[in-house]
Amino acid sequence: MLIPLLLMLAGFFILIKGADLFVDGAARLARGLHVSPMAVGLTVVAFGTSAPELFVNISAGISGNTDLALGNVVGSNIANILLILGISALIRPLTVSKGTVWKEIPFGLLAALMLWVLASDVYIDGAARSTITRSDGLVLLGFFGIFIAYTASIAAPVAGLPDVNPAPAGKAAQITLKMVIGFCGLLFGGRWIVDSTVILGDLLDVPRAVMGLTVVAVGTSLPELATSVMAARRGDVEIAVGNVVGSNIFNVFFILGVSAVIRPLPFNPASNVDMAVMMAASILLFIFMFTGRLRIMDRWEGVLALLIYCIYIAYLLLPIISPGFPAGSGG
Image 1: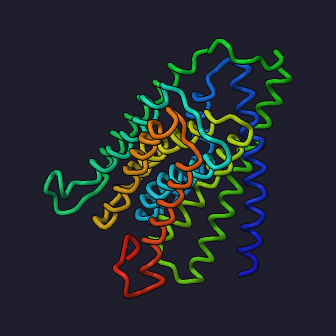
Image 2: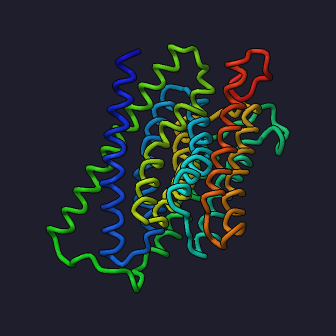
Image 3: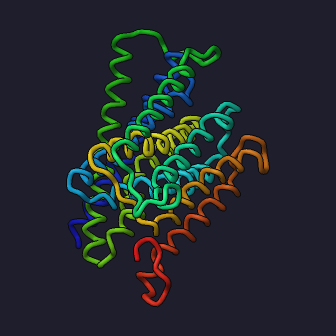
């Protein structure tokens, strides 16, 4: 029990330090190239912080543990919006651009909706069981291609962003090295935390289905958490929001697309509740842009998001804590 706890603490330290370096490098890169911070958040930062989900899902697909692969992505997307943006909004109200409200956030909602459609063979096609097949995986990867084309279109140089001192091959190399070191810290720190918490979960007899939606999902979302929190503290709120929205899109279209191509993912109808929570979280984020101050996620909205997330986690854990309680996804 002591060794996993020590590994978890070491993982947190490496993760937070890595997030600091990665966000600082990404922000400097955006300013130096006159590229929109949102574009950087949606692509470079989002892909970097989604790496743990990718590696966990590839391992799960190869080993045949498909429940973990699907639960990891759904749980991570729920945690990204409700937990990570909730905490980030508490640190600093999150102001987003008009384009983010009407393009990027709806694109994230489309990802959640498409995942539910592709996983609902029983309800839509009248099939005997629901499976995210290899052809479904290729459809998801096709949507990912559209997303990449869109982000490339908004990554054009933006006038009015302050310069970082030109030059610099040396300067560019320094920024790149900082981002690479930060990325490694995010990757290995997140991995250590996940491994140690999974061991602790096994010792405490927590079902693997619940582990996928809670411990593994939150564990693989820790890079997003650390990165968005650091970005919010630094005032780079566009990176904080872009990181979460981009990660959710990456998780569904790219990571689940790759996972399904490696091995088809059977879908348990009991997971419809989790799918519904994921779509509801995406809709809630869109609504937050119009409640209170326009295009701002205020602190009270962050508190509401965190409260909803706590209720969801309680729904997952109550069947374990109180065996007489109706079982949720982990039952």
